[in-house]
Length: 247
Length: 322
Ligand SMILES: Cc1cc2nc3c(=O)[nH]c(=O)nc-3n(C[C@H](O)[C@H](O)[C@H](O)COP(=O)(O)OP(=O)(O)OC[C@H]3O[C@@H](n4cnc5c(N)ncnc54)[C@H](O)[C@@H]3O)c2cc1C
Ligand SMILES: Nc1ncnc2c1ncn2[C@@H]1O[C@H](COP(=O)(O)O)[C@@H](O)[C@H]1O
Image (cartoon, rainbow over all chains, first blue to last red; front, top):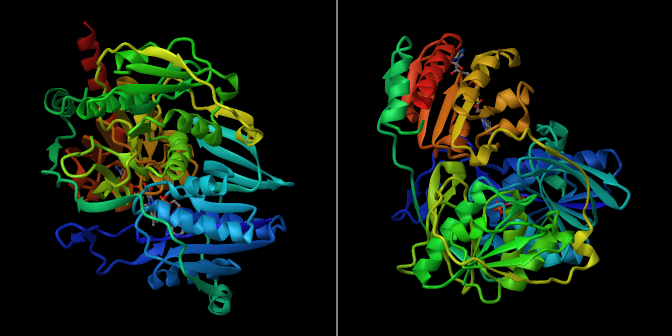
């Protein structure tokens, strides 16, 4: 089985988010970019495990983005991806991203396309299902376990209020989350090897964005905590009832 | 027309679904049009949908649709979407398989994680949560048809009784539509509200020292009928099941009340919970960063404070019941 893993860059999780240009743009100053955790810890590591066990033959990476995406792609190669392709497009929305990946996946006939549950910047959780639609294949969202079983995938997926074990024919697109694998750290050999692995750049195919982010805002700052004495928990009960009105 | 996907679980509709209807009904009113609810699979009683504003109920009772399939469900939605200008889902796992598919198929712009009504004064802008709860974005949908997936607990329930005329429809399914085989289904114990929909949440962190100490957290939660959550290291150490993990890499929730016990309040944890309407923090360290994000705080040892709080809440509940 040939696996394509979709990876995207995201601000480090400790980043304090700020905006510029009249709140129309993310202030990228000082932001450390990381591999989107869902893509790295779950989709990519699980794909690598499947290759190591002999169940998968190839693990390729794809990212849609500008040249500033390449450091995180090198990291993904250092973890163990065989080769990577960057579609040279600073995409405007999930649909534009999905259209690029679907186009590439169709031309290169992958059995499985893995992506993360969501990107931690826009939190859309949309790209995977859009790729599946454009390829007219199966889609499994929020998978927590993935094994290859002949021509099928055996998966655990989250459902509303529980979990389901399913068998899904390939080709398929799967969005991955916690449970699927344990995070890894690239070793020196991997980092050295990554320098010479292919990272190809391809030009985008035509696709219009369907939505556009117009402006941003930060949540209102909390006005300050009301401290209650540990010996007077009754006061908290009263405040929750009378002031916050939540009980 | 505004079209709302009314997901059912064995013939019942969850609060989050009725919330999506309330939201859709409001948009239909603004646009001066009707709202139709779409029900897939066998369902004996759809009348509650009319109570929350459905002028029309489009029902496909094919038993092959009793189980969710992102492909089959998308086909069914696409079939009834011709006349729709806005299509609404409650943003949950099934919606994440359907709404993007439908968006790509109909070339209809999608906003997932929506938390407010669209602003139609200049374009069609929908507010959503981004950067895992650290900020909001206003997304303009530029296509004729629009799709919105609404975050649970973001809008509320509004009754608006309508006719709810039931219309049936058929959809042609092919083998790919039902190719995913379900081998086993496990649902989490049925008596508590699932985390994304919960209005009251009690959450524990590493400060509780070990899974054997969760009794005090469970007692507090049971007293007020709250759902349990936890910080990431707690789930990683298998003190608690993974589905209780909230934060940047876990669930994002917005309950009315979030009580955090023995949780330091790391930025990645806050990302998943800071949209909660009221936050109570119980921590023995007065410098714990969580106090900065809290509405109410108690500096103290959880093992002393929590049982006392549970007792006080029990008395309050007993007094209310009289
Ligand atoms: C990429 C990334 C993603 C992450 N995603 C998440 C996420 O999704 N969710 C998440 O939660 N974390 C996440 N984290 C981890 C996060 O950074 C913190 O490490 C974690 O939230 C800490 O958990 P904690 O507060 O339970 O434990 P600790 O930080 O150990 O805090 C324990 C707290 O308990 C208090 N305490 C101790 N004893 C008592 C007592 N007897 N009574 C009262 N209080 C007591 C202490 O004062 C302390 O504040 C992520 C980290 C990274 C790097
Ligand atoms: N620009 C991108 N390039 C490659 N993959 C992406 C990109 N954006 C999103 N993805 C993939 O799609 C998943 C869901 O992203 P999203 O729909 O943006 O939340 C991510 O976890 C990635 O696996």
